[in-house]
Length: 241
Image (cartoon, rainbow, N blue to C red; front, side, top):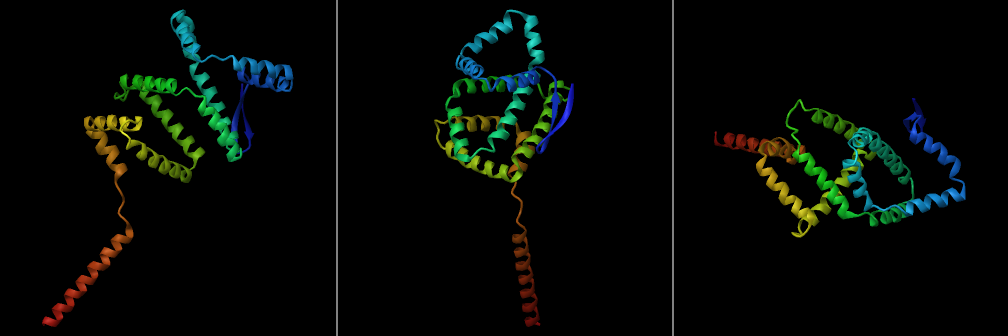
């Protein structure tokens, strides 16, 4: 069951399911000290390295269970994305010093090697797929996902804020790319090699992005200069006559 609910500045869809039940139960139990102690104990017992073994068990022990898990994966991911979106919205209302300290603790605890391996594996998987065929169902779904993502991302960030952050990111990336031992430098070199093998991407994507529009004032100045030269020529011609 779904229904639209107004919350602040946006409309949310209210559902009746597992997450909703968890929310309603949590509201009743969260004020109980014993329950909070139990939750904290469970969270402290989370062991990330064992996740690889759990995934292997799901993949190879029971194919039926694997297909069921993969079938519900979109809902699981969407639940995580909804939670992350709301967490970001709530954290954006925090004072900057508190938010900075909180994010510092979060980022400090993230396993960068595992994150890099996961992202690299997903990128490699994407490169192995044949997405050049226009009739590919995966290509169509990715195109639709990209449109929804771009629209919501632009709304959440704001165009002015996005331009500022992009400018700051470019400056930082340029500085890191000077270091030949950095991952940014390695990425740039790999990207350069890929550009050499894909002239259409360079012509129809990179060149339009790098084109700098002519400044109107410069054109006007040039026009005035041209007019001045023409007037000077006419004057000289009149003197000769």
